[in-house]
Image (cartoon, rainbow, N blue to C red; front, side, top):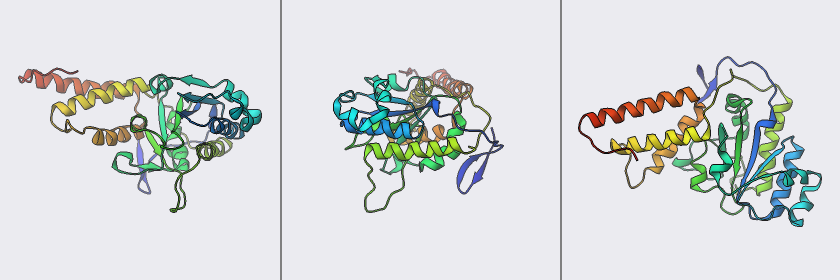
Length: 265
């Protein structure tokens, strides 16, 4: 797949118009603390044509406090997938997207929801996409951020950058709805790697980079976060994962053949 520069970002070449299928997009609330926010998020989803709500370690999402704000969207709350951890929640996802208001080297680059919908989402057309939202107080944990291929930040006034959880869901859902109503850019369909395949690759990569001394053993996470985002933006396909892991295995063999007896964990 070829790419061309577009105002400092990477944009696909050879687009052709197609409508966006919202049925493949999952809204994942990670450890929501207030049932009211679950209900309001469900209502925002229904307003925008989204139907797949996923909850990770939620509060009681079927309480009266969740029912009232959900209104006619309570069916989404009732049918929500509930998981005890992110591993099970994301196991079939081909693209994982996180929302954050924080910056920093380990959360770079940040794109707006509109940029993501136009420039990145078309690569996963027809395949499962999960959009993560963190807790009301602290947002996504570092562990959750590290699982993301793309990070979104919703533009705000500089005086106050924090949105209510349900408001953030609404703003991202609205951008998805707009794209579904318009002609969205599309690239040739890519057979993206699963979340499990990507995680296995990242573990293999980290082990080899530690072994050759590229990463510092006391803090490998910062560089690895940047590498995750770099590979995540490309939309790695299954075949590409196999090639990259083949390179890592060849590196491992070369080290061992030269007398480095350390083994991969």
